Length: 517
Image (cartoon, rainbow, N blue to C red; front, side):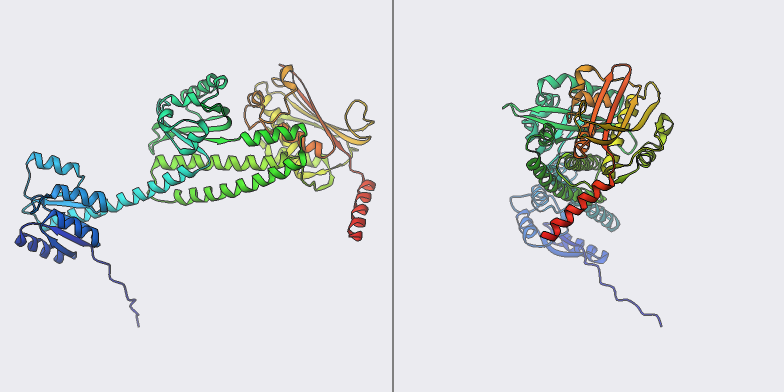
């Protein structure tokens, strides 16, 4: 036996008829009821139509233009649509040009001339309801997008095809110290620190010319003199057809990160700053999680336009980059715990190349003696160090297509020429034959966000060597760089050799402390 499921009846569409001739109104009502609509009321004046719209649930209004009272159908339609967002379809005998022009201004959803055909009436109503539904969903989508953009911690901007600014959100204005009106056109250039202005303007126009992307660090200066470091990212905005319509981008305030990392590098208040960095990164990631969750939810809205989706993708990418910066800040801090174990360097370097440079394996010449000592260190952090060093070498050596040598050997030091404790070490040398580094820049090579270093490395945030320096220091090792323009760069890393007896002593001391506790 087949069991039939009970289905709930669909709620009927509620329509108000505004017509000053009762016989005509009743005729319209009969047609609508036969089609399946629910006529909630019939009124003959604009004033009463507005009042009923305010107090009754109505899905659509059929409006005659000539009505009793002081308000005609055109004015009544305008107020009903503007105040209550109810679609209005004109059903009138008036076709003169003046009336049509007045009616057009109210943005009606349909215009039917009396006498009408029932089929024409039905079609117009259905199209009007569909159009109103799509318009409502689009407005809701735009409202969600605008809300997200307004409260985003990332500055968002949009330009036209010529690179002239046409939109900035509130966060952008806060960072730049300009109003949206001041930022329009080329006004945004005024927000740049004067000494950065030419460089960034040239880079921006080069991006537009090449059709590529814009990724730079630069500084904003408000009219009051406040300077803010930002990481800017922009990309072309395209239609579904691929036609470029402008550019969309974001700016992220990295001032605090730069200040904290600079202090960490110089050794000022390392413990307290490390704690602060962890707290900031934690809170920052919590905020980003909420933002990225909202972005993901809105991206799934089927009513999002192509332009809005591009803005959301840009904001999502900037948020992910901000999260990565927070992670790097924690790593860069000199605080933190090392998971020190016995590390076989040959395995470490081979895994690093395999995981990160599969296409460049032929570039590396590796020399490791069979009696090389094991390293005492944190495998994950040291892998990050050598990934940074090899990445710099690969990027610097691209034009010459030369070899990158990795040489490892056992050494002992008495602390005479190198600031290390007496003991056994593994010395690793990474050498490339690339473009080299000017002498005046070598003293700043380990500075975080060193701008010329970004150009030298060609990509990245300028944190690679700064993070590597911090990790090596935590391992009680040493790192140094020597270079000459046109002749390549050499990086030397000293890491403590694994000492089983020393490890046993450390473990014994830990056990004694736990027993006494």
